Image 1 (cartoon, rainbow, N blue to C red):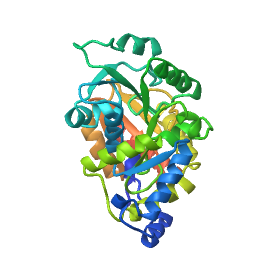
Image 2 (image 1 turned 180 degrees about the vertical axis):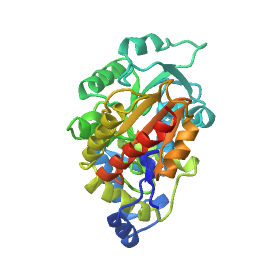
Image 3 (image 1 turned 90 degrees about the vertical axis):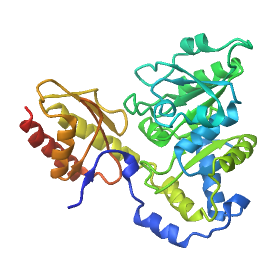
Amino acid sequence: MTLIDLRSDTVTQPTPEMRAAMASAPVGDDVFGDDPTVNRLQELAAAKVGKEAGLFVPSGTMGNVIAILVHCGRGEEAILGARAHTVLYEGGGISYLGGVHSRQLNEQPDGSLALDEIEALIRPEDVHQPATRLISVENTHNRCGGTFQSPDYLRALGDFAHAHGLSVHMDGARLFNAAVAQKLEARELTGPVDSVTFCLSKGLCAPVGSVLCGSQAFINRARHIRKHLGGGMRQAGILAAAGIVALESMIERLAEDHTRARTLAEGLSEIPGLRLDGLPPTNMIFFDLDESIRLTVGQIESLMQEHGILVHATGARRFRLVTHYWIDDSAVEQTLQAFRVVLTQGG
């Protein structure tokens, strides 16, 4: 039985076109900078986000750690949202590896950071306190429901940060979802920030990797830190080839994932016992179980798998479902039917 996997868009597998590109990719030693396929990917990625240069890295987590370590020295501070991926799901790497202090504030419902609240956290120059150097923003924002940031907000954030002598990093793991949802080019969202990471291995379907982009001077420094972290790869063009296909052919189709997420959410909203956060802005659906559902989330996961559906609980009574390339209209309908049957058992 082929399973319908809604646990995350990280479960996507490379398309046949990607596999063919990987098999025929010209390669070299990327640590020496002479892998032509990696170089092409980095140039393409930088152009997509309007930056001078890019750096291929094994994961988004590594990209974010590298970026923050370039912007901040040991004992310095980055301001981040309390529900940011870097705070919750990256192992405290900026502190463990870079000695960077994270100062956190609660995001607004749309995942943005209020400028007046950021201003209240900026440290004065004082030997008793870590120096504030960076603001990091997530776009789209995972734990705020797949919400996205607008060009107007990002311009305001960039102007504010630079006026205060701070840099801005964007964790754009799902940047292209944010762009497609707003019918924009990605560079319209990344222009005001100093650095940005985005993942190739989520909705864009490549098997591995992210790209960190910024100025040439920034990327030169980032390359050193990537080496420190063990992220220098050799004939990495085999992986980069899939990333090129992703950037050339997989971006616009993200709109289909958003449409299917909305269809799935609308169907779930009609099932008694489910409380949806609302219609999804991109490809993530979040919902809670009310007291009428007696099943545990673990029991629901097991029963759904018996119906051929993989789902993932994010809390004691909470689920996140994520649509992606391998979820078609039939999969959406099968998922809704399975939930109707499973939750009837727990009603």
